[in-house]
Length: 326
Image (cartoon, rainbow, N blue to C red; front, side, top):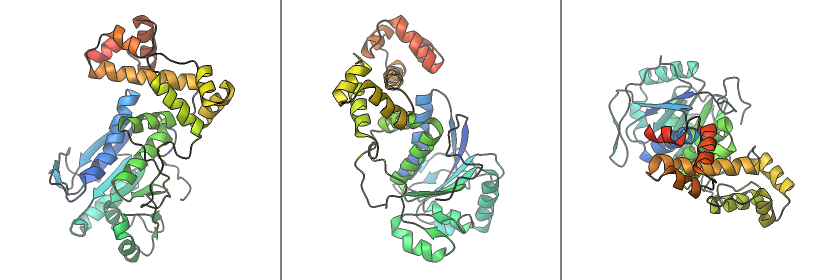
């Protein structure tokens, strides 16, 4: 993949990213969900809107997905509207959608956006707009040969997703989820990306350059196995937290080594990650249940409701009672 350009969105940056998702009838509902649901979950975990996404269609009418379910949208695609990221999601029927007006609009929008790309057959529309000329790209494996023949100026690769400068392309629903996790990890850190993956019990993270048909061993594959073991211990002892020394002993390393593993893989100390994991569990109970705060404090390993409230307020910028009211 090419070196990032100055408007790169895949870098550490805790500012709001405006995302426009242009959906076409004939797209897979899984592709749409994979594009927006990880962003929605990241906002919930962060406690603020760091990804402000809006779904649009060319006409402003709902897009009908391949399973027959319509996707409600927020309006028409406006090439002049300000946005940071444009995601074109399409499936069957892209030939009929590639009008001169649409392609011109995509080119105009891409000039002002920080990133633009296609999901599954949306890659064809991005390519027909001339945005993939001289760049690397991918599309769904079924269309790979036809796509390469249609766009000889594009370096077509069998990868799950490809990021080349301000342009990205994805092979399908699962690679789109991988891409969005990569976006979240790049901007907000590995710890938040792991939390998002956990929301969906998503354990199939793969490298972008993996060939599309290959299956991964899990979302922690490629990381130090001691990290996975330590995190599983933490997850199993949310109500009665273990000390970092105890986790290290059970993992077969010293506390100093465990801290080095966490800092190298996640960018946090084991203690900081453990606390955030417990507070994330607590936040779900605060928002999704009517369990008393004292019981939530006990379930997530805090010595008292007061200690829980102080830690919660420091992490989420408001006390748990206020969050529940809202």
